[in-house]
Image (cartoon, rainbow, N blue to C red):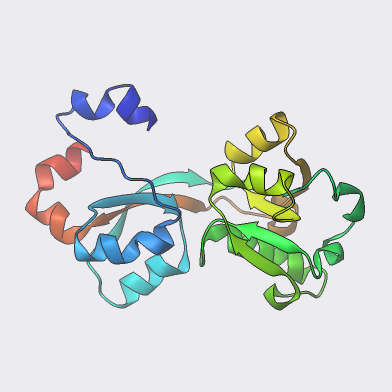
Length: 195
């Protein structure tokens, strides 16, 4: 969105049609079929599955790396009930999409208390909507990413409880990437390179 608003695409002769997606995981079928040429988001199992199945997809370039600064936020009305990861048991937790990188974050935090996904109720909610879901009690906790999590805190819709980096102990590694349809890139190498 920033590149589009600042005219970076136009500067290199690209007329981009930007579509909102919840996760690269859910966009992989569109990308592999050529209905979408490039997708950006968190590195997830769907990408590796696509590579293993010889789908025409490849990581074109990095979009972000660790540390993640992904936060588990909790609602103001329940914040006093959360002291340790074990307190997530039986609670409703928001993730952005099935198979997303933040699911791994939650998995590691739950695992530190001997819990699994079976011990929580997961609701899939887009990052921009997580604050509202916390505020109205639709979820007790949400795994959110910058800048959305920061906005939730700033607007008082929820509070920061856990930084998942404390549980993942990340080494420098790519976690956000741009995936490109290789068939499209081969047929349009000039525009692919300009992108």
